[in-house]
Image (cartoon, rainbow, N blue to C red):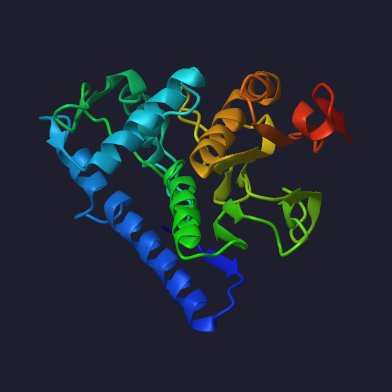
Amino acid sequence: MGTAIHVELWSDERDAGEAAIDAVMAEMHRIDRAMSPFKPESELSRINRDAANEPVRTSDELVELIARAIEFSALSGGAFDISYASVGHLYDYRLGIKPNEAALAAGRAAVGWRNLIVDHDARTIRFARDGMRIDLGGFAKGYAVDNAAQILRRCGIRHAIVSAGGDSRVVGDRRGRPWTIGVRDPRRPGEVVALLPLEDTAISTSGDYERFFESDGVRCHHVIDPKTGKSPDSVHSVTILADDGLTTEALSKSVFVMGLEEGMRLVESQPGVDAVVVDAAGALHYSSGLLGAGPQTRQ
């Protein structure tokens, strides 16, 4: 999955606890095998390779995930769009490579969630536009931590946390105390801007500091605006809290692209969803559910 996986739990029996962790790791590897865009044999790679030519029959799991992604695209007005990969794959963050304007325009022309055709009855995915590709990187880790939490509960675990990069799922409390998760300071490594006490919830953070390079004074990072094919720069990080990781990861990307005002309106419209946003000036913004009032900011 291209990220570190962390599992912490309590179990009365060591062997049972280790077996639960092994089950979580096995699930993470299964999801990676199915949904990695870098593995030629994955279901996702097969869709990217063939779906512009013909409907590609795939698993119920992937069909439903892509259908959910389309729902988040509609909810966010296209700010969340797994077909961003049509332009996103042109960036290489390790080598510091970005596309020129011609390549960017060509890639951007293939982006568009409305051109993702899902046939639920036939269980197929089709692309209605040449050059299109999808990437579940803004989605799959949240799904993975949700599945991990279900596995732990089936194993009888009542106190745990599972993290995959910036996505975490909390099971129960920390044996009488809440789990505490820090929101990282986007510009001061090792420091946090907020501490959040959590029980039975999911949390995702998207930041411009995770994978990036600087080019001509501009930070090119891994969150891509599907409309422009470029990295948004109005916020530094977005943290979303909700009942499930699928929602938190999708909305953290959506709000990042939408920006503070529009993004916070989206958050406030969703029951049980809260947000912490660090804007480009370094100011901290909380949704009303975290403050018991309207959206407020703190310098």
